[in-house]
Image (cartoon, rainbow, N blue to C red):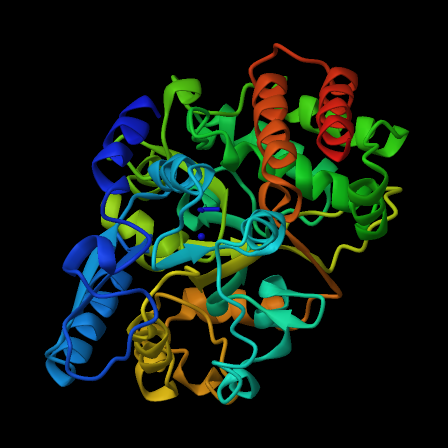
Length: 431
């Protein structure tokens, strides 16, 4: 939901390295030991730093530990922007947390190729059939499953209905031309049209990715990932459309130094009524509420606009979800806890609380939050799906997408330069 991303984070990770990867490091038991009566400790790295998921996971940990007094779970919630560098530092050292959040895709595949994660195909085979195929897809490679989903969703525009009404916008924009016109109308009222976490970078890549989907189409993105060539005219055109938006200066003052979920970040700027909208995933309402005042009934959602003449379908969705992978040296209790948390009677509590979308078959009735339902409905009607580019592609390529798009938004790179550096990185990674 990386969310899915600092020097401070890297420094802090050093404190964790010695305690990660195996239970032997913590309490003297050996990795893979029985979950009988001997004491077992494992670490659980997750992104649940905001409600309702913070309480959801804390409650599951308490319940499991109460039923298994020999097991100690170190519940380590890490803010999204710190999580990625912290995890990268650990995995680059040849270790992985016992149980940890993953968005799947190319990043997880790299962990698999490094031998850092467990193949769950057999050990979790008894529950794989409980999940919807779409939610499992990002964690499956070559017919094997290396992670279990806890959430699935899509990115779209979350907007302030009152600000739109004040600007004379009666219906959300359906085309890129209409969207740019809406930005101009909102700006004319003296309100910031869009909040953006420029410092975090990953929120900015959403714009280029969606525009590439609309202009070039899903097949082109897939092919580029295979040929390692993003220099085609449609990818350049995606950057040109984004530059059209950037040239309108739609973002809040100081956006280049803004984070996502901080009290003065992207989510709070929208939540406190200081910007009309943000392009963000299904977790946006809960983060807005956690970091700001919240918009209540004024919060609305619309899907990313189509682009006139584009090859992509307006119904194609961009996003992903969240899942959990098990480190190869984790004790059996780590997977046992994961199975416990993903029982329908447990996971549906997170769905009912509005924290995640359904990933289990038959779980749809648990959706009660209207904001989550609108995303669930939009996802159900999607004609195609593209995983976040910074997760779909190898880590270095995904990071280059984030960095290059951030420089385009900052006015430091042209659309042509963006595709050139992404292609150079992709080719160098394939050598």
